[in-house]
Length: 218
Image (cartoon, rainbow, N blue to C red; front, top):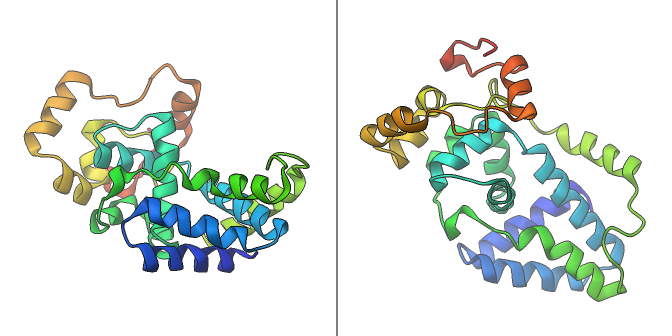
């Protein structure tokens, strides 16, 4: 299965099932069960590759706004939901997460089961866990291939505070938050992240903010 095959399957699920995520999951699993184990394994690897490549603080900030808060696990489920919207929406969100203001939010912005469909289908077909015979070098080559289509927008790696989110994601803030709500969050606890986290501290020391915030590091 190529990345184009993957996106075609995702598009068919969206076309057939619309906003019914349970139906989408059932349809996708049925299609995978009709394929060979290698195709199913490829589907799972590609899906997890796109999940990994979307693990960006700027996108997580968008999820925080859209979902009124987003935990680590919740962000995985959100990224699965984002993939289910199709290639164009996925790529646009990584160029500029504010484009998600134009995407209908349904299913709670969560598609938890999508991340497990490939593994569950593979186990049904072969009786083996998807992690068996995992080839790390091959997976890295896959990531490099998938990444070729992605253009990350400036500021996507920066963990934004509430006081910065309005400038970085004005359309999303306008759609999901009132001015009063934003002001209250800034006053109560401006930082949406754990400021002692080594990952957050490293990102704030090295990553650039979006152009709308001046594009400066920190």
